[in-house]
Image (cartoon, rainbow, N blue to C red):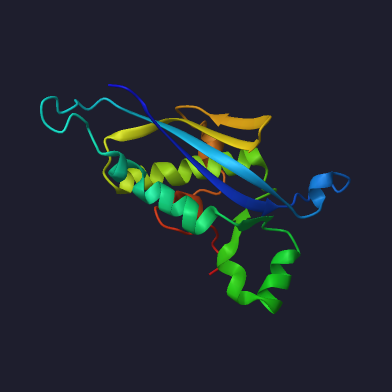
Length: 173
């Protein structure tokens, strides 16, 4: 069975707190691409549909999550004082804040996206699983998450928004 790959483009903004001298300490944005590769051991329906699952079925919820929740979200560390500013001044925007335990680096974001995709695939009862997720922060920088997450990647923020098969991007609301 061939692997299936989907790509989605989105815009995002973030800032990092751990290195105050970094250019990334100032809020800024990126236009990013996320590529996911799915595979299955299920048999293809040769002579019938000639697939295991349609592209529409496989990518529908994932693309909806990227388009409706991730695109133009502002990624923040849960310890960022900007969260209190939003709570006090623009509480209607809390749903557009993607919140991480620690800095919202590209590495952390890629792991969060992978866990969200896994949750969606499981919730859909899909016979497919993710074998690779590539998050391109810029045309020259990307993070690649392989077929399995290590125990630390699975334990980080366990049970948070990234493990739910919904459109959530934080646990603020």
